[in-house]
Structures are given as structure tokens and as C-alpha cells.
Length: 282
Ligand SMILES: Cc1cc2nc3c(=O)[nH]c(=O)nc-3n(C[C@H](O)[C@H](O)[C@H](O)COP(=O)(O)O)c2cc1C
Image 1 (cartoon, protein in one colour):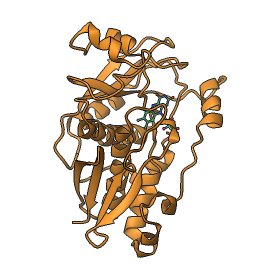
Image 2 (cartoon, helix red, strand yellow):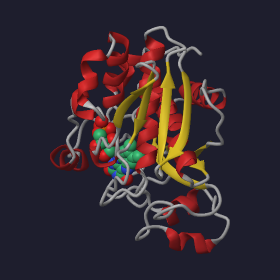
Image 3 (tube, helix red, strand yellow):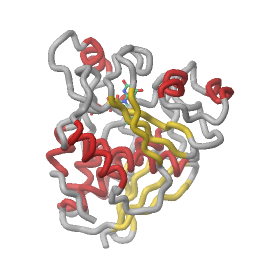
Image 4 (tube, protein in one colour):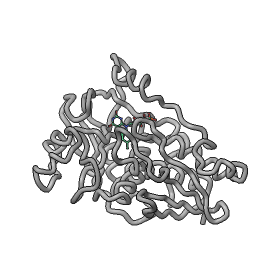
């Protein structure tokens, strides 16, 4: 498994962007992203569908934010494991895009009716009613393949009011918890090797809805396996699908171990109603 971009540099550079230039992505960069999307080095079986679509320069698809021309949708079935895999697969494409100097932002609360108009994908118009007050694919598990999340893909607009960015800066900070605060058992901290600490450091930098950082790290197999999951029973008052975020974090942890020269095996299973990722040094 080889990743050609700088893993740590790319993770450190990524930020959710909510202000874009209204110009399309250069063709050669777009071709590179589409090629990467077609042959992503994902270390497990999955059925995540990636669709590139165009949006109009209005504030309809994303609340308060004008859509740039290029956008990506990540689609899958809606069970816990499938949506968690969307997080993992989608984040790898988001990081690849970042390595090409493009900006992105995970959106779970996109306007479903507008997405359907721009990129027809629903099996029946009735499915529009499942969106939570019009946003996202549904409140919980439902039938068929859905757009779990979408992201704009484009060039950051540095000038202008950046109102949304300023609001977000105030309400949802970019700050991250320390590794020790993310351990299921804080006593484990002193047993962690440099490589594991490196991987967890990249894991804690993952994006999450509302910057909730709901992931917790545990260890199996004499510290040769890292587990990534939310605490059993975790619920967020606004975000219905935190297992997506857990997949994103698992992707960062996997990348961290790859970066240190390991070829980790990656498994995900359902335990206590949530996705549990197991990333093992091999
Ligand atoms: C699964 C997921 C869904 C998200 N949904 C939204 C959204 O609907 N609207 C939004 O403005 N930001 C959304 N975000 C972006 C987060 O607010 C952002 O990642 C977090 O505040 C951390 O900031 P950073 O990405 O700049 O590090 C989402 C992030 C994730 C991972």
C-alpha cells in the first residue's frame, strides 16, 4: 500500500473551507483526482460510490455558503458499517485533494432536494421526506444507497467577509483534544510506542461534525492493535451519523502507521451498536 503525498504535512494543512472562488478546478488536477478516486488504495472491501457533480453558485446546497462549481458526493448503504467506511474512503480522497492544494469541507447537513436536482440519485421522491428538516439523507438507517456526505472541491477564497468561517471559528473551534484525553483507559498512555503515538496524533487531528472528536482509542493484542470507536451509547444532539467521523479518524490512524513504515491490517465490525475499527501492526 503506498501513498504518494506527504501524509503528515497534508493532514496538518487541511482545514474545512467555507469560502470558495467561483471557478472550476483545473482540468489536469481534476483528472488526477478522478484517477485517484478510481483506484484508491483502501485496505478493506467496501461499496462506497464517489460521484463528482456540478453545483450552481447559490447558497442553496450548503447552508449559508455559495457552492463552487465542483463538488463530490460519497454514497453508500446506510448501515453503521457502510457509513463508517464512507468516512474512511472519503477522507482519503479529501486528503489527496488537499495535497493538490484544493479546499474541501465535509457536509452532512446539505440540502437533500437541491442535491437530488443537481445529481439525481434517489430511488423515489418520497425519500426526500426522510431528510432531517430538509438536510442530510435521513435521521437514521434507511433503505438503498444514499449520499452520506458531500464536499465542495475548489480554490479557497482568501478575500471577502468569510462570515461563515468567522462564525465557525467562534462556535466550532479547530482545537483538538490531547491524546491522553482520548484514551479509553488513560493508564495505557505510558505503554504507547512512538509509532503508535504518532498515529494517534494524526488520528486526533481528524475532522468531525461540530468538531465533536467523539473517537476514543483502545488497544488489543499487547498494544499491537489500535481500536477506534465512539463510547457505547454516544449521541450528538445535532449530528445523527457519528460513525462517519469514526471512519475518518480510523483513516488518519492508518495513514499514521503507514507513514512510519508499517503495513497495517484494517478491520471494522459492529459492537454495541457502533462501528469499531481495529488497526493492527502487521
Ligand atoms: C462527518 C462530518 C460532517 C460535517 N458536516 C458539516 C456540515 O454539515 N456543515 C458544516 O459547516 N461543517 C460540517 N463539518 C465540518 C466540521 O465542522 C469541521 O470538520 C470541524 O469543525 C473541525 O474543523 P476542521 O475541519 O477545519 O479541522 C462536518 C465534518 C464532518 C467530519
